[in-house]
Length: 493
Image (cartoon, rainbow, N blue to C red):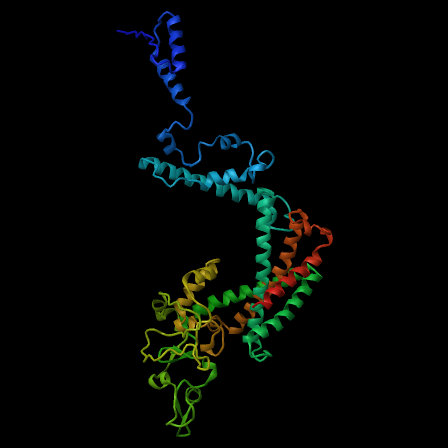
C-alpha cells in the first residue's frame, strides 16, 4: 500500500543556513504538504554544489586529469580564444592554454585500476585522433595548391600562427645553412681521400678542407645564383647515381654468397694495420732464396738488421691476414652482433684474436694502427642509421658480410684506402665513391637553394623587421648571405 511522508520544518537554533530556513518557512506556509524524496535530495545536491570548487571535495579532484582544473579564468577562456600570451587572450588564439591542458597531467594515483585503464584508453584515442587530423591537415595544405617558398615553415605558420612558424622557421633555416657546410666538407673529404689522393696541398687536412671547401662553396653559390632550374637538372643526375649505388651495394651483398671478395686485412696481434703503407703482411719475406725484411720491419724497427731494436708489441706478437668480407654465409654476424664502443683515437682490435698486451700506444701516430676516428656509442649509431629503411637494411647486411675490425674502419685504411662499402659493392668500388660524391654535392646545392628561399619567406611575413627590406629582390642577396654563413662555419672546423 502507498505510504506518504510528511516533512516537518525545523528552524535552525543558531540562525545559520539562511537558505535552509527560508525553504523551511516556505514549507510551513504551504501547510505542511507532503514533499517527495526526489525534491529533498535535489535540494541537498544544490546545496553541495553551491559550496564552490574550493570545498575540499577530494573525489572531484581525483577524478580530474588536470592539476589546475579549478581556475575560473581558464574556464572563462576555454573554447573562446586561443592566445599565445596572457595579455593577448582577447585577440589572439590561446595556444598556451591548450598546451597547458595537454601538459599538466597529475602524477598522483587516480584511484581504481578500472578508472586508470579507461583514462589511458581515452588518452590513446585522443593522440590517435590528433595525429590523424594533423596528417590530414598537412596533406590538405600540401595538395590543395602550390605551397609557396618556405615549405614546412609556410604550413606551420599558417596553421599555428606566426609565433610558432617563426620559431620553427628560424631554426630550420640555421639547420639547413649549417647542413650545407657539412655536405661541402663531405664532398671535399671524398675528393681528397679517394678520388684525388695527391691533390692535398698541406699536411694538415683542416687547411686542405678550408681551401678546397671555399672553392667548392663559390662554385655551388654560382650555380645557385644562376638559377634553380640548373640545380633541379643536376639533382636528377645525382639522384640516379645514388640509386645506382644503393642497388650496387645490395648486389654486392648477394654476390658474397657465391664468391666473397678476395681482399684481406692485416692484424698485428689483435690490432688492425693500415695496409696501404706496406705490401706484405709479414715481418720477413723470401726474395730469390734470400730472407729479407719487409716494409713493416722498417716501420716498427730502427734498422733493417736482425738485432735491431723494435717496438715491443711488434716483437711479442705475430702478423695474421684475415678475410675482410667473409660473406653472408660466414656467420660473422655473430661476432658483430654485440657492439664494441670506444673513445676516439683508440686502436681497433679483434677481441677474439690472441695477442700479448703491452703498454698502450694508441696516441703514437707514427705506428700504422687503425684507430677510431670518433667516439662511438649506441645513440650516435642510431642517429646515423635510423632515419631511413635502406640504412637499417644496410646495417644488417654490413654486420652479416664484413669483418668487425674492417667494419669499424671509417676511411678503409685497412683495405688499401678503399671505402668499406666500396669493396662490398658490385661491380666496382668507384660506383660507391662517385655516388657518395654526387650525394654530398647534390645535398649541398639543395641546402644553398632552400635556405635563402626559407629566409625570404620569413622576411616576407614580417616576423623579423630588419629583414623586411626589398623582399621582392632579396633572393640573390640572401643567397650570398647564406653562402657567407656557410663559409664562416667551414673556417671554424
